[in-house]
Structures are given as C-alpha cells and as structure tokens.
Image 1 (tube, rainbow, N blue to C red):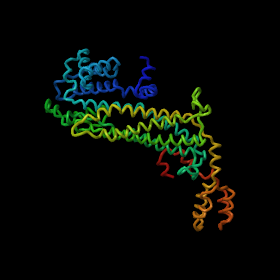
Image 2: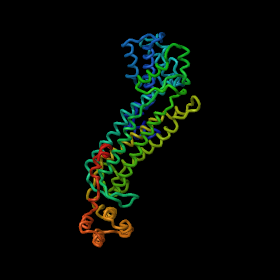
Image 3: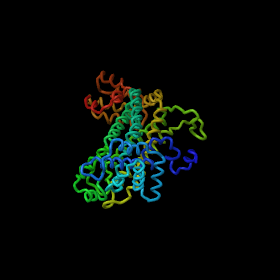
Image 4: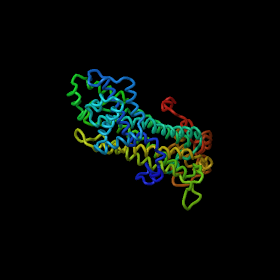
Length: 464
C-alpha cells in the first residue's frame, strides 16, 4: 500500500491527514516505540543486576557486553519491532514478547548465561511504567516543549513590535479603556511562559517493586539484598523519581500532574486563538495569503483564519483527553485493574493533538500583520472610553458624584469629543484642570500599556 493510500485509509486524522505534521511523535508513541522503550528498561535492569552486590547469580557484564546490549535499543529497527510483534501474536502478551525476543538476542550475542536474569522478579507493570515514564518525558522535552518555545518566541516578537500600537479594548464585548496590541499579546506570553515552566518542572516518577508492590519475589529469591535501595537507585538511573510505596501499578500521579500542566498551556492557547480570530474579524489584523490556497469554495475574496480555527479545535481535543487522563489514570481498583492500560495507549493521541494545535497556532501567528490605521480609527471613534479618566480626575479634585455625572452624559448614547469638551467647560473646576481634561485623547489613554508590553519577568512589575 502506498503512503498516500495508507493515510487515506487511516481511521484517525492523526495517522492520516496530519501524519506528516506529527512524524516527530512517532518515535515516542508508536507501538514500535513502546517496544523499544520496554527493551531499554529490560536491558538497563539486566545491567543494573549485574553490577549489584549480593546478586551473585548474575555475572558481571564487561563494557563491551554492556555496549552490545544497549545497541539493541539504541539501534532498534523495524525488523526488531516486527519480531517482537510476532512473539506478541504467539503469546498474546506484549511485555512477555519483549522478554522472549530479548532472550533470543542474548543467545545471538553469545550472552546466553544471562537469560534467566532477564525480567527477574518483575511484574509487567514494573517494565511498563518505566517505559511510559521515559517516552513521555522525552516526547515532552524533545518535541512538545520546543514547539511551545517557538510560539513563545513569536509572541515575544509581536509584543515588542506592537508595544505602543494603541487599540480599543473590549470588556463584555463593549468599548472599554484603551490598551495596546503589544500589551495584550504580552499577557498571553507571560501566561504561557508560566504554563511552560509548570510543564518543565514536572518530575515523572517510576516504580520497581513487584506484583503487588511488596518486593515479595525479590525477597523470596534474594533476602539479603537491600531491595528498597536497589529499586530507588535503578529508577533514578533512568532519571525518573522513585516511588517505593505502590500497589502493582505506579499511581500515575506525576503523569496526571503533567497532563494538568499541558491542559493549562493548551487552554491559554485556545484563548489566544479565539482573541486573534476576533481581531481578524474586526479588521485589526490582516493575514498574508498563501499562494494557491482557497479561502472559500464560492467566495474568491476570502482569507479565512483557518490556522487559529484549526489550532483551537485540536487544542480542545487535547484538553478533553488530558483532562480524562488526569482524572482516570490515578484510579485503579484494589491492587490492580487493567483499565489504565488501554487509556495509557492514547497518551500519544493527546500529545498529537497538542502538537498539531501548537503548529497551527504558530502558523497563524506567522501570517498576521497589524492594521494600525484601522485599529486607531476604531479607537478614535469611541471617545466615551475617556469617561473613566474624566470621572477619576474629578474625584481627585473633590467634585461630588463625578461617576454619576459621566454616567448620565455617556451611557447608552454616542459621544463626540466636542460634547465631552462642552461638558468640561461647564465644570466648576480650575482652568488648569479643564485643560488637563481637554488634553485627554483615546489614543493617549493607554496608561503603562507600552511598558507592560515589554515586561518579561513578574518580579520587574513588583519593582516598579
């Protein structure tokens, strides 16, 4: 079957329409990748056993033997995956299939005397939880975080470039105190950067303690070994944080925490996509058309904001899955049930929709340009936003009930600067204050927005 037909026949768009976009994730979340990570865990465990004191039945592996073993997962091939899959079809157990395949490889490498140490005293979950911990961490670090970093960089560039671009704000969809486009983009930059830090800070955990978390088989076979220390050290050797007290399964609490952190970043980006969609709709932003692209099947003039719409839709799918994972995965009946196993196989789906959402959002950000004249004209057309400034200055001057005065003047009616200035002329305040009030303009009423647009550290705000 051709690659094109394979994509056309795929049941999900991640493996079909968007397969090329998501190719970087296949190295972490495909079935072949899961086999490879299981092989890695089994081999590193075997090497660790060979180094441990008081585990005399496992001979020491020299440097060349260790290198040969590690090459099995470092050079893992499609043929290797196919061979393990064949074992899986034969025994109907994917972890045992890895063990049997690995025993064959030991014979091939003339390391047959180590075969009985493969998967020694382990339950399948000892291998699986560590494999998932490795693949999720590496997918996060190698694919997801770099994609998020590119969005952050683009947001920073826009915030800097448009720091002083005055713009009418809208609260409740109505004209409100002016802002700048750069400041509004920097709000998203700062929110997303905090979310990015939360994703990065999650330390994924792992366990190695047997069928019900009691080290029973280990202690029965080798009672003189300090298995708590061994387990802790082995999990740490994989750069995962050890959890010693569990049932048969690692409780997935750290994975749930990561899902929640990703969900927060994705939700922020949905908010960004919706706001940018609205700015395009209002004519504040233009989009660079792509050569040959069609916006509408019947309206030739259209350049639709499809990247932000696509980003919003895929990020929404990711959020829904991530939320399910964070609620479901920490729950397992008594000492073990398998409901988490089938759910875990879909973690890559959530990462796929996440990455697709990031890619489309970034593509959209790369196509927009601010229409400064349109933005400024809309702001100038709403002088009523100065009512806040006028009533606040009048409060400073001790004028009675200035809010109510401005409410009567402005609410539910169109206002011009001329009418506002007539109102000012009739006030019982000094000429200096009247001059101050007449000098107010919508475009000049942006406060610290231009400075806020360039803030990159919350601590700098505190120092102001």
